[in-house]
Length: 344
Image (cartoon, rainbow, N blue to C red; front, side):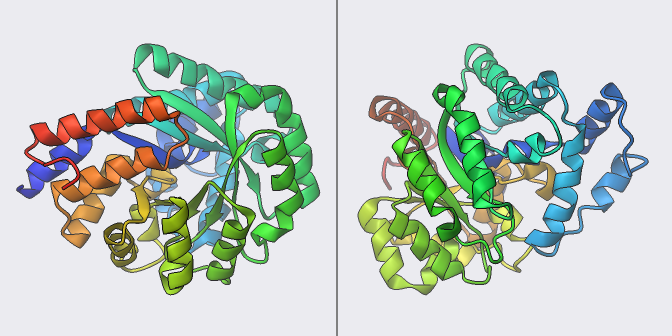
C-alpha cells in the first residue's frame, strides 16, 4: 500500500485502546474552557503558550506539567466532558472498545470527591455506548509516588463503584516506587475481583526488576514494558501466559530516539501480544491511529502487520470471550476488504 492508503487503512481499522489516561486527553482548548467555566486562573495566556510548555525529556518533566493542569477538573460535568471529547476522537480513530485509566488520587487529593470523578466518567461511557457504539471500561490507577496506605484507602473508596471499574493499575513516577511497594493493595484488589495491570515504563531505573515483580505478582497485563526484550526468560513468560503489553510509540519518542520501534516489532514477530495505544495524546500529539501510522512509517510495517496489532488489542483486552470474538471478526472482515489475508 502507498503511505496514504496505509494511513487510511490504519484509521479505519477496528481496534481496542488499552493504554489511555483520561487526564492525558485534556487538550489545551478544553483546559481554557474548563478554567473559564470554573473561574480558575491559568499560568498560560493562550493555547500556543500551553503547547510550548510541552517540552518533555523524561517522565519527571512530563509529570511536572501533567498534574497541575488537572486543577481545571472540578465537577462531574468536567469529567464527563473530558471523557466524551476523547471518545469522540476515538470513534474517528477506529476505536470500538477502550479500557481507560483514571487517577482518582490526583483529584481527591485536591478536594474533589471520588464520586464526582467516577460519576462523570461513567456518564460519558454510557453515552458513548448509546450514541457512538463504543464500549468502554474504567481502570483505577494508583499513584506510585504516593504511599501504599493512600492507595489502599483509595481502593476501599472505590469498592462501592466496583461494577463501574474493571481493574486497577499503577502509574506515575516509577523511581524508587517498585510494584512490591503496593503488594498488599493489589492482593486486596485481586480478592475484590479486580483485574490487574501495572506500568513498567521504558528505560527506567530497575525496569527489568519491575517487569519481573509484576509478572511474579501475576498481572493480567503490563503497560509499556518493552524493556522486556533485555531478558529472554521474561519474554518467554509473557508468551506462555499470553500477557499483553500496551505500547505507546509516540509518547516513547519523547524520551528515546526511536520510539522503541525495534523492540515493539521484535516482540510482535516473536508472537508477544504487543498492542499500540496513545498514552497521553493531548500532551504527545497523537491519538491511537496516529500511533499506528507513526510506528508503520518508522518500522516499515504493512497493512497485515497493523491488522495483527489490532487483533492483539482485542486478545489482550478484558472483554468477555464472546465479545472478543465478535470484534476479531470485525478486524478480519475489514482486513479482507483491504486486501489483507486473515492472520497473514
